Image 1 (cartoon, rainbow, N blue to C red):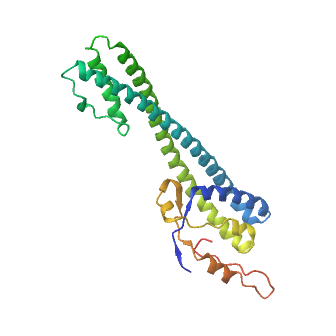
Image 2: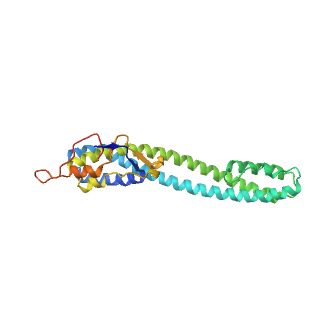
Image 3: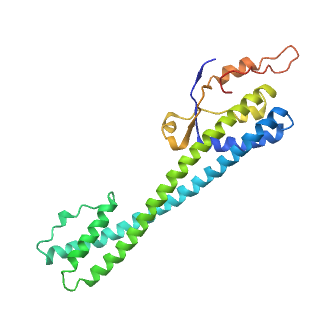
Length: 245
C-alpha cells in the first residue's frame, strides 16, 4: 500500500476532535475504544481549548493592529503639518531626514521625537507641540500593545500546533481501531477520515498539521479492497498495517 505524508488543516482537525469525542461515546462499550478514550479524550479536549484560544488571540491581535495603524496615521498627519511649518521658520530643518512611514512605525515614532525637539525652538508652536505629544503617546501605547498581542498570538500558535500533533496521533490510533471494529463503511470511520489540504494551505505551518508517520493516502483503493464482503456477507476489515487509515 502506497504511503506518504498527509497534511490537514488545524480547522479541519478541530472538527475531527468533536467527531472523535462523539465516536468514542458511541463505541465505548468496546474494550478497545474504552482504552483509547483514556488518552484521546483529554488530547481532543485540550486541542479544542487551545485552538479556540488562538482564535481569540488572533481577534485581539487584528483589533490591536487596526488601532495601532489608525493612531500612526493620525501621528503622521500631525507631523506633516508641523514639518511644513518648520520648513518656513527653521532654515536648518531638513524634512528629508525624517524617514518614518506607516511601513516603519518605529522610525515614525522617532521622527515625532525629532520634530518635537525642533518645535521647542519655534515661538508660538504650542498647538503643534501639544497635538504631536498627544498623538505620539497614543500611537506609542497602541503600537506597543499591538506588538504584544502579536507575540501572544505567535506563542499560542506554537502551543496549538504542539497540541494538534498530540491529538492527531490519538486520532490516527482511533481510526485504525474503528477500521477493524466497525469496518470502513461505518459512518464514524468515514467521519474521522483526514483529507489532504491544498498545497498553498500546507505551506502555512501555523495552520496545518503533518502526520509524523506515513499516512495512507490511497483511501479509495483501500476502501474498495477492504470492503469486499466475506463469506458471511460482513465487511472485510483491513488488517493492521503501518499506514494510517
